[in-house]
Length: 168
Image (cartoon, rainbow, N blue to C red; front, side):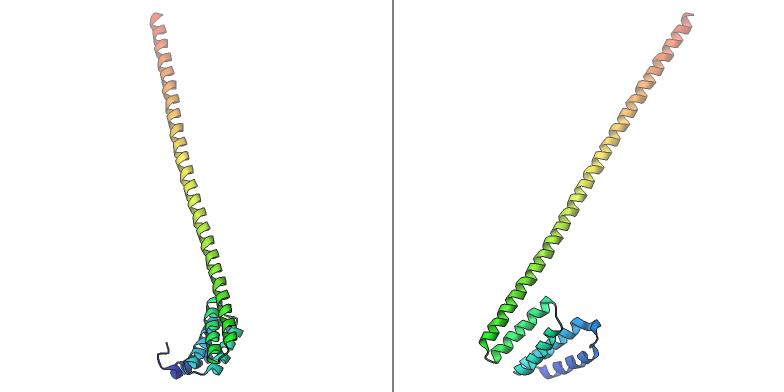
């Protein structure tokens, strides 16, 4: 991203920031502010980096971006020799990472639960279809048996009636 061209990267980010100052580009604005802060860190200017990191935090970034921003805040505090503040930011970074992992785990659990419920439904549907097919076969066998019995009774009745006619 920066590769030794911090000044050029910052200028491009600031130009893009002017274009994207409307709410539609909310996440892009935060990302650009983080890039600008990173360029100032590359140039060992922690005061200006701090200004842009704070601007980005004011925009209420998502958890992933907060992790990046608190990492930058920790780095800035180390550069300014505020070790207690740097440790505080590292603690915040750890807490945010834990919260993000908790959310990811919750989503994975919900996703797994949905997949499991879907698989159970699919299995139950297959069992119901199989049972229905078996019941249908049984119905046809019984119907065939009844037709054969009725045919046999009719055939026997016909034969009896023919015998009676022959005797008369």
